[in-house]
Image (tube, rainbow, N blue to C red; front, side, top):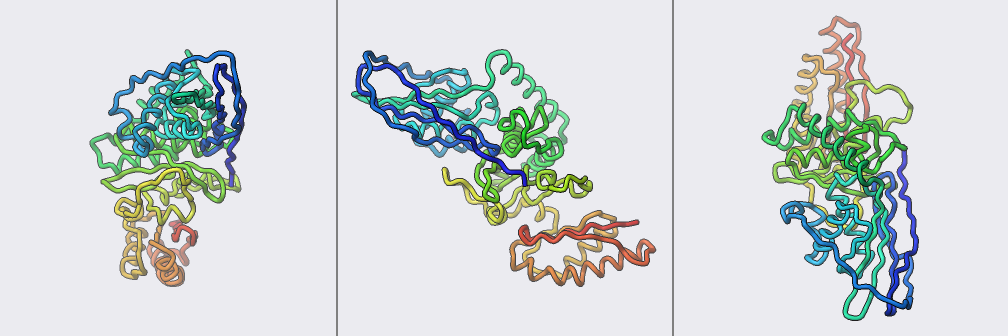
Length: 409
């Protein structure tokens, strides 16, 4: 499996002052392949300087409604929300220095991470930042200095490309904000998987531009494009970080018909999971296990970071397999036989049996493989005048799924 690694770097910055300053220098983690940013206290030093300057705090002109529905913003205290808005305003302005009224420099860095998680369209930041916290008589503040990868005319040109590409994608889409939320989520899921190639060393891989415009990215780009397009379609979607198989990873949380689900377009792309370099049959080009899946399903392979508490994702109503009628909570011979007969009669290339958990999967596996599927193969042979039917199958005990690939010639 292609791995993703976080890069860390720290450096010290000195400012002049006439009082004893407690300087806390923090450098946010440079983005790893999963786009995970972490702040940590690197050093604490006391310095005496000959003069001091009063800080000028960032002015904020962001409408309240623009941030009110953002997930990470909603998890913050009122004081932290003010810092969040100041950081957001400063980053949008490409401000070299952003002074905020908070002395916990580590928390300032984490709030910056939350800003980036809430706003996938911020592509011009590397994710690295240096924060210096000052304790002075009567109070304190932090000087926050984010690292920018794009500024000025180049930034404006890239923004225009993002906007034009999004307009083209959604303009050609067969869904709109008036369609059911599930249809909008499925459209974006399939579009991102079909249009983006997983490339480990892709340019701008941690931001939206890589996936939306360049069509090459890693999980951070997949997740940011998914979030960006769904938000434009009026669907609640946020950016989630964690680990898979011990490696940093990013995916999404969505709200569909009042319930929360997880979506992972990276893991929905078989190219990401492929290791032999061969071609992928058309019927296998999208994996739907991570389209509106529950936490029970997701946590078999994914682990959340512990920074925030996410809403419970226990509903299965809008799970892809539930909607497609191939989700089973127990062995059901009549229903399974009916599914097989209908799919063979209509010459469907694939039959999928998705199970709610390990017990249902184990209860059904042998009876499916050595009974129902074999019988269905005989019917297939008779219908097509064959001496024997040809099929292959994929048995996935981790995802509790059995997939059968039929050949009709």
